[in-house]
Image (cartoon, helix red, strand yellow):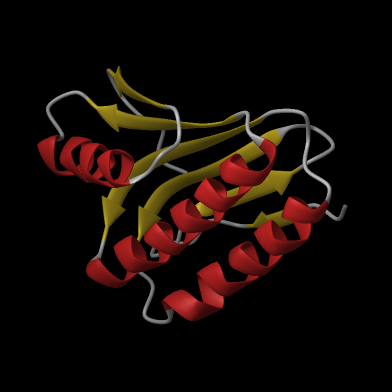
Length: 130
């Protein structure tokens, strides 16, 4: 399976999807003008990954900021992860947030409460800005 990597920009997150290395991470700020450009390749990659997933999948989110259109795209990612979990099991979400960042914490709580996937909400002192 090909690796997917998106270099972070001032308005889009760093995205690493590497089945071989077991790295699934979206990190940083997400406020691109065109969320389809950023997230459609991720959704397509996950469709391919579902055909031959790892024995277990942990998807890490370390968000610093999300605009409304990014939240919609992340929801689509969560739906795909939920489908993967229903078919293959062993999918877990780790949602990191900076201490005192109630918006990102609440986003994580909301996403995770809507899905039937094991998840962890993890508070960090600081998330490195990419």
